[in-house]
Image (cartoon, rainbow, N blue to C red; front, side, top):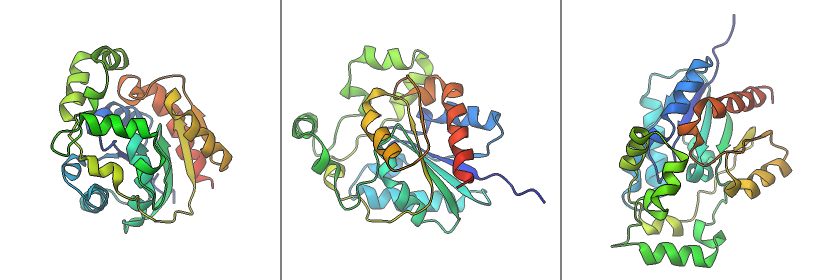
Length: 235
């Protein structure tokens, strides 16, 4: 009897929504990979963000019709939460993939490892304790260059939530993960994280692309992601 393939659970960045990964979900499905795309935006509008994210994530997965093993794929700021997401599930998780994402820093906040000037900038643009939507951190032409499809960009931007500044100060979960991991780098901004993953002995794939390539070039991202998922299944 042939076992069913693991379902790939796509987890969007806390600063974005499912539209940023929906094209990738379609491309993976076309390659024969069952996919579950979550919408966790409701969790990031109030602190404690980490706890709310983990709780709603677990409920969303367990309430879904998905059966069998899972591989969790976290984009960007969702990466550090992948071990905690896996730990919160009753369903078995066979691997984690970090998609142009930060790596876990158990017990440490984003602020502790970020350049002080970066934190100072985000604090300066926050209003009433909320950071502006992610798209407002950049010049409009920067985003349109990454996502030329106007309708898709409007959907991605429309979903972007205002995240509490406190999120950056919250210690990340101290959850141990001893299963296999992989890393897929899309942009130069995550070169250091990718190098760290390679040093840890993880399978790594790299694209010369940009942070939102899962939306604008989903087939290009789906192919190496599928390779990583297959590699994790052999570990």
